Image (cartoon, rainbow, N blue to C red; front, top):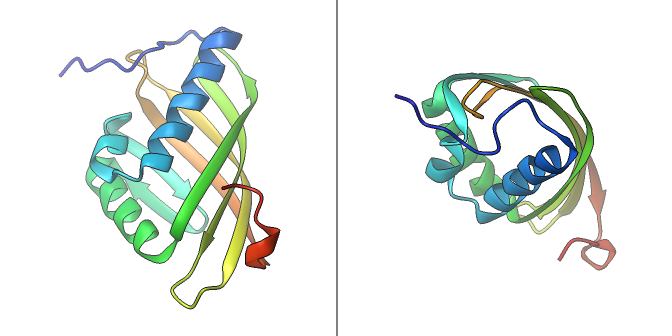
Length: 138
């Protein structure tokens, strides 16, 4: 399987920004099967306290995520990059099934293979309870 996900490493500034924007758009689309195609078959994640391996686990994780994080809206920002690695800061807002809103903040470290597929994703995330009127991402 020689699937490629452009842009490919090594990244320049514009390509790194593009990769971040593509990820933001995909996650805001909330389609786990489509999102998973941006990751290598053997992708490794750390998301908060979870360790996820492979596309099938990514799909399961994302389905469960959006069953619990309702009206999810994400904003990502390029923080830094090298040839095949990108660091991102992000924030997203969502509410639970009881109507409590949250703003979640964090950082992600990404590593890509030669085909532009994300091989590693390490995310540190903190949640802040907010009121609905305090939302900034709409």
